[in-house]
Structures are given as structure tokens and as C-alpha cells.
Length: 177
Ligand SMILES: C[S@@+](CC[C@H](N)C(=O)[O-])C[C@H]1O[C@@H](n2cnc3c(N)ncnc32)[C@H](O)[C@@H]1O
Image (tube, rainbow, N blue to C red):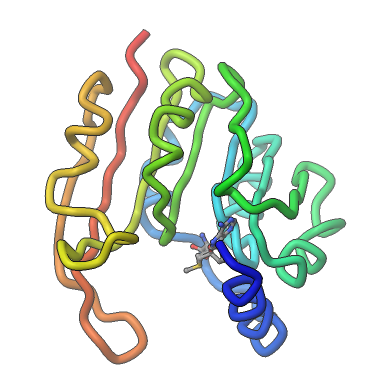
């Protein structure tokens, strides 16, 4: 992540402070997670962190954008808003009942996500697939990366985002006990 990337996201969050709805896959599968600690990777404006907090989780919400994190900090005492470059951040081990990775992708995190979840913990992933782009997933990649997990839901499908269609992937899995 470069300083330019941070500026790009800061500009976006300066222009758009509205509180959008949580991710549908999170809303649908949150019931699987026992209450406790949650990690929202690349939380952005915190739409999913707020949802998790309202459901009773203690949320670590991490993002590189200081604008997004400053907006989020103080909104809910159950949210710990952390301004960090995830490229160099370490996920604490054996800490989380749920980790969500929504519209973000960093393969370096995969082993840390596995260790960061408690046994029985839930992983919810929503991201993009494009074989030609290094920062996107490839088809079935998550199934291989988390093959030791029990897969609850997996789907790859075309979804409209900002007037164009992207191949999206949705993945819900449980770390085996
Ligand atoms: C498409 S937004 C998704 C935000 C949020 N997960 C959601 O679904 O609303 C991607 C987010 O990734 C964050 N991001 C990008 N690179 C990052 C990095 N290296 N470390 C932490 N956050 C990063 C951006 O600041 C941005 O908020």
C-alpha cells in the first residue's frame, strides 16, 4: 500500500460520509457466530463494524484511511477503530469469533486469518475475482486457501457495482474445532 492509495481512499471518505447498509452476506450469516470478538478487515466507513457492534460483538475495525477511521472512532463504544496499513499489520492469534473481509483482498492475511479465529469461529469473505489482476482472487482460490475449514456457503457470480459488472465471490466458512 502506498501513500497514494491512502490518499485515494481518504478522498473517497471525505466526499462520502453517509452510513450505508451492511453487507448482505454478513446480515444473512451473522447468526452462525457466537458473541465475542470480531475483526472487520479494511472496514472503510464502518457499515459492517456498526452492524456487528449492534449485534453485541466487540469489534476491532482496521483500515488504512485515517479519514474513515476518525469518522468511525467514538461512534460506538464496542468498536475499536484502528488506523493501520494491513500490509504490515499482524492479526492477533486465537482472538476472534468472527473475521470479515468485505470488498478487500490481501493473500498475505490468509494464514493469519486462520490463526486469528478461535476454533468454531466464522470467516465471511466478499471480494472480486479476476484472473488477470494480482489484487483480485482467482476462481475457487478461497476454497483452496481455507481447505481445512468447513464451508457453509460459496458462490461466484456477476454483480453490478457502480454501473459495471464485476465477478464477485461470497464465502462463509467455519474453523473446525
Ligand atoms: C472497497 S472498500 C471496502 C470497505 C468495507 N470493507 C466495506 O465493505 O464497506 C476497501 C477498503 O480497503 C481499505 N484498504 C485498502 N488497502 C488497505 C491496506 N493496505 N490496509 C488497510 N486498509 C486498506 C481502504 O481504505 C478501503 O476502506
